[in-house]
Length: 412
Ligand code: ASP
Image 1: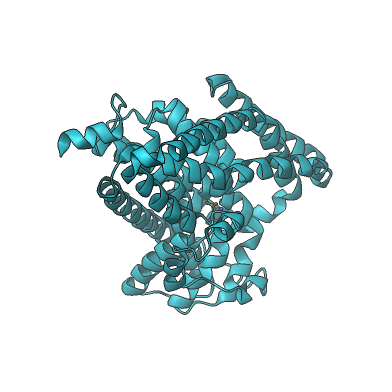
Image 2: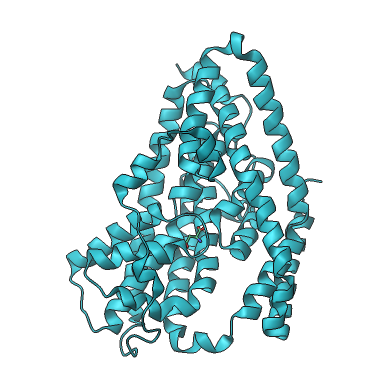
């Protein structure tokens, strides 16, 4: 079955039912936790083969590394500018609502995260080139896999005649991976139900109270970015109806919210973009896996808000240049954050260290991190999806009438 509106509705119903069961049963709802874990494992199982197969075929269809370079350049500009914009929104909101002022500092006392290793920018860059592609695949490392797939796809495109059997193999492999994704998506309502029931069951509502304004600040910021900025770009740069596009992406957004992982959502995001929104798979297969790994608008916005919130709670006033430093480091920290639950909380150490804020401050916001993680992950996935559609449009590759290669060779 395809991703018909019926599936979206089923997933949303699953989410609502899960939340209700979680509220009703509390801690007992964790009984269904294995179901949720199974669903995430099924999704994760798809990620690496899907990236490899679709990106290799994407490269064969784009035809030339030069063409990919054009898409890559635009992707880079889109990702960086939207993430920076998100941090500015976060800064504006946190300075306006001032949720940390008057907070009792050190509510959560010391945090175990203080001793976590945080990745440096250089180490992220060094990560891109794998010394062993099989190891990278086995360890679910997305960037090195993207790097290798681009090389492999380019080599296949150049040696087309000789490589025909291998190209057919990847083509068929890509097709069956999409088929398996469809099967697993059919289980999404159940998986999402279990995930929501477990999360809501574990979360006591009482933890929200002291941090309500902080949460509101993050949510309003995320809302402005997701409902105004990105749809604005979709409309004016991409000439898409944001509402139609939103409906096409609904399954992916609901999965992002329930799993709090852009990586686990990746197969669903790609499926929705290609099948529902009809964005060319060549663009999707490059822009989206990259985006799931490095483009996290929601995480960057959240980190900017959280850092200033901690400063406010500790009575530390940050100057404008320091706030700009927060924006910059939150952008970098979001790039470095893994696409898994809670990753943003770990890389926030980078932001806090950059402006000398107490790392223990993270302890204050731990209790409500999961729910905010679900929301920021949804915005992360929405940002990637909008990006791929906008870039496809700017490149003249949308709607798909010809292959990407034909479009580019006509232009040359
Ligand atoms: N969970 C987020 C994601 O997967 C990362 C984060 O923790 O902010 O996109």
